[in-house]
Image (tube, rainbow, N blue to C red):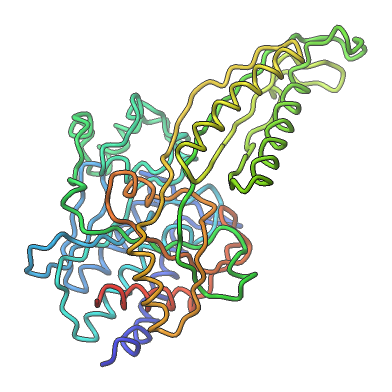
Length: 418
């Protein structure tokens, strides 16, 4: 059977798996597959069953990541295809899961076409990519590559309250092994890492293309609990006497937006996101000046030096706002993820594979950070395919078409076959 026909023949398998993960963690109006919890565990079991049906061997590593291996009998470094299976709270069905299913679909297509791999192919179901669960993202790939920050294993789960270490151990992992801070897989022994992921902006809808070759993922600096402290006061207090924490939060947010627009005007893409933004719920009032305010910040850029420069500007802006508003601003806990530039050779190879498949595939930056960032930062040759997806992600309205995912699987299978 020709490879293109073999890919098309896997549409029913891919749709069955997409429908299967959609029933896991159903949380109207969206999907909640909790990391290191019932939702992620059930999705992992579904994918493991599909892999075993293709003759792949299944195993869990110390981070409780799932690996499905199609052994080649050759000693060449393996190719890893992966993504994650957790979701944000009441998110969509495709963010992460579509990429794991793409790996299964590509292996099934190669087998149907009678193409024997020249190196082991591994499909990974990585744990806890979403930062919502522990205030830290990309945890599965961090575990795999020894990139957990200090103290990460003591972070509490947003719902269960269990520490990350307890959560990992409860799902068949080994947190004691992770505390050794050595990679579970030596990056030097890995041939490549490929990730398929829905696009998280409407660029492909705009371009009228089913998929794109990713050029880079942004890195990020995150402060989940910024605390601004001023003075509580009566609502009639004149402006000159106020230490207004709420207005300081607004001032800080708008100052960061001005920085964003200045940077983009200079051709330096980045993003600022304020997620949490509130006065203390137990004390806020219509007739009081708030002496407390809390917010979160996600600051991202595509180059490590640029990200460092932006973080320095953040510190300066916070100090300026604090002085102007007569408050204190504590940025608080910090986490970071390295930018993920894609391997240039893999970018060219994927582009050539798309051309052979007759599929238009522009080259685009991804607006999101992904597990691919950690592989790229660890020196593993890394590539990504972005799949058209209307309505963005991290919401119940993700709208990836199965036909577009099949196009990505076709390009991935063509690349693997070579």
